[in-house]
Every structure is written in structure tokens, then in C-alpha cells.
Image 1 (tube, rainbow, N blue to C red):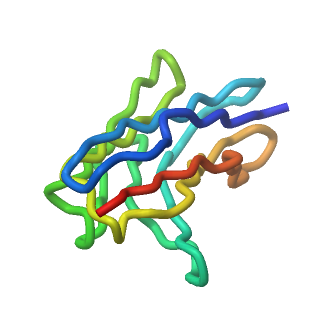
Image 2: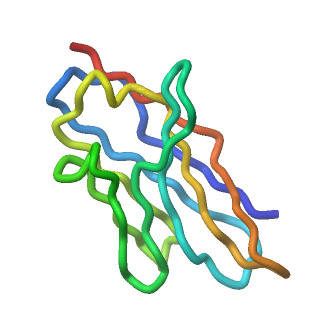
Length: 118
């Protein structure tokens, strides 16, 4: 059974920083892409950043220059360093991993709340 466990959310003032972590556990052949999505109240879930197994990454324009995605393959963990946070970054942040077991599936974490006060 594959599980994704997130941590690191919380309440921070505008301009502050938070670091989210997402660790994958269980039995699988490989982890391909790992990324972060967010969903604000009343809005659709949106991509924030994604790290591909080949070493490339994509960060959405809305957070580029403020958020950094990184990955520790030895720990099966992906991180999202969030700096210069703004109130509009307030959302539930979800980790997603594309994992190959018998087939390739998308797995999601439980979500972690990030609240940025003005």
C-alpha cells in the first residue's frame, strides 16, 4: 500500500516562509513525477510545481521566484520551499506522486493547510 504523508503547513504572516514535505512509503517499483497542487476555498485545485524523475522541474508563474521544489530520491521525499508568502497563497496544499507499481498510478497526500495573514 503506497502512502503519501505531508507535513509543514501552518499559519504565517505575509512575507514569511514555510517548507512543506511529502514522504512516500510502501511498495513500488519507481516514483516518477512528484509535485504540489493547491486548492483555495471556492476554487479549483491548481498545479503549483512539479519535479520530474529526469531532473527537470516546472514551477507555475504565479509562484516562480518565491517557491522552490526539490526532491530527495534516497528518502522518497519532495519538498516545497515557500518564501515571500502572500495572502493569496492561502490554500490546502496537496502532494501528488506518479508511482509505478504494477501499473502507473497517481497518488495524493491528505493535504496540509497553509494560511498567510496580511
